Length: 216
Image 1 (cartoon, rainbow, N blue to C red):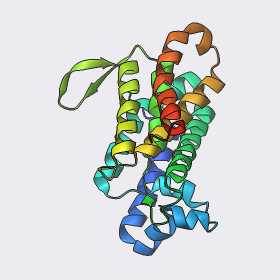
Image 2 (tube, helix red, strand yellow):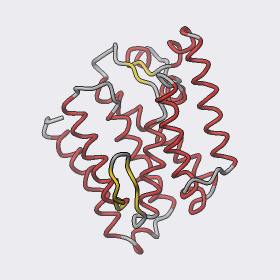
Image 3 (tube, rainbow, N blue to C red):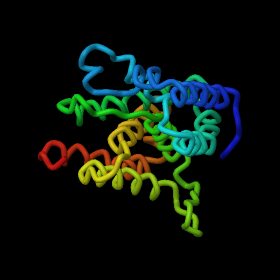
Image 4 (cartoon, rainbow, N blue to C red):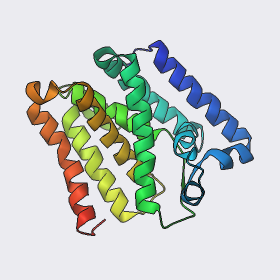
């Protein structure tokens, strides 16, 4: 983990440049952030552009740091083009899920690469579920697949509670994008690691059931 491939450098650079422009230009930020009302009026470009804007430098730093750690796994195992497809696909799916859950709230807004980064993270976990992750303030390694399941279950909790300013639905939608696209690109995983494929699908099934039963 943590190699800086050229495509990773480019993605990080685009995020930094776009975000810095947004930090210093309020009208630019307002024009390209995700906003449900604006998307409904036909400004679908915001579904993409909002993924390259960030609230502040801390928001930008942690998203890019996470991308840095996991991008190399996806690139090494699936290739540069597939990495870009997963990144952009997860970004878009994350914002589409946000739109689905907030379509009746014309004032809902969001920015950040979290959906795209979540897709890369979940893709990396699916490709290498046996790797261990270390979290801040937790001094012991966590198996990647356990982290992945816990991450999405926490996202479901956040979506239901709605007691913070975190875009949990975008995180979840991005992770679904990473999961589905990775399996489409590497269907051999159904044969070589069916158990992990099934385990990592659990939170997705939970969200589907909760949504169908009107509990989220």
